[in-house]
Image (tube, rainbow, N blue to C red; front, side, top):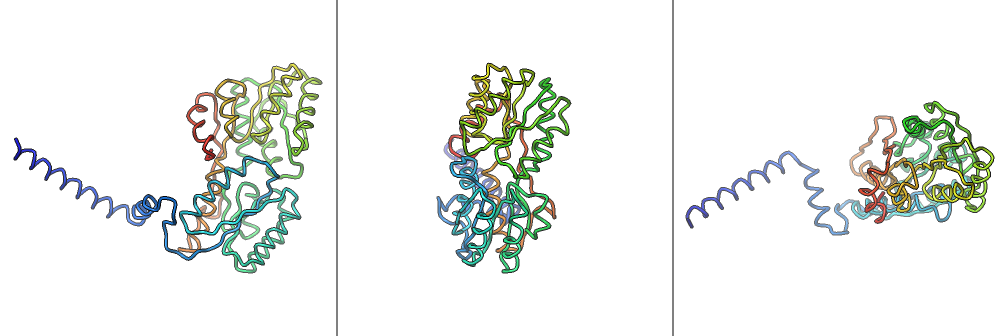
Length: 334
């Protein structure tokens, strides 16, 4: 019996050795990088230079969506030995000035959003002229290539809106209200226009000041009180979904509240039926891939997308998927 066990042990060891050799021969660089990342335990998994990448977004103060984007970017930055800088301003001219400041610092790469592309064009051109590679994220997919960016990472906002329109049709909705919380944001307009493109019912837009939640709640509530036939409200950001729910209660409306983007409260509200569905564009992935692709470009001259945006969404999330995603939203990765 002892001899049998010895031979079994030898056979298993040999099989494991063959398996590992096969993995190494076929996995190549990917397998080696995975091993290094696992061993790094929060330290850089590469020995490339300590490059500095700057991310400049159109986020306003307190917008939790961008916390998730930053979480992804910071995780990739640790892995790739990157010094990561983050700044933001919801005023387009100020955002452009932040890009100019990054250029003046001679950073090694820039990640930028193009929510208001006309105001950002000159700043991006200045970065390009300085030889700084630029990747756009989240908004501005249609302008990204024309501005000279390496690629765009995010969801196609029109396609995302179309997915919402299809979902509303499946739910038998007839009259929807699309709430835009940042006037002049091209991505928001594309979302609502996308909904209108596929929605077989009637869609109207409501412009609100997203920096003032009491006013947002009041505006939505007034609209629901004035038009009892509205059976669906679509908000364009997770923080506004909860406000829309409160407005529905105040108005005594039965309209379904649906939203773009996820956060822990949205996941919980989906699970208990307070919200109908959400559209996830995976912001963690946008931040992570932006840093990772800049590193790949600097390290190996790699570019993804083939001239097309690298899509991270949309994914329609309903009550059925909410519990599974709740754990990820709590840790700030979904």
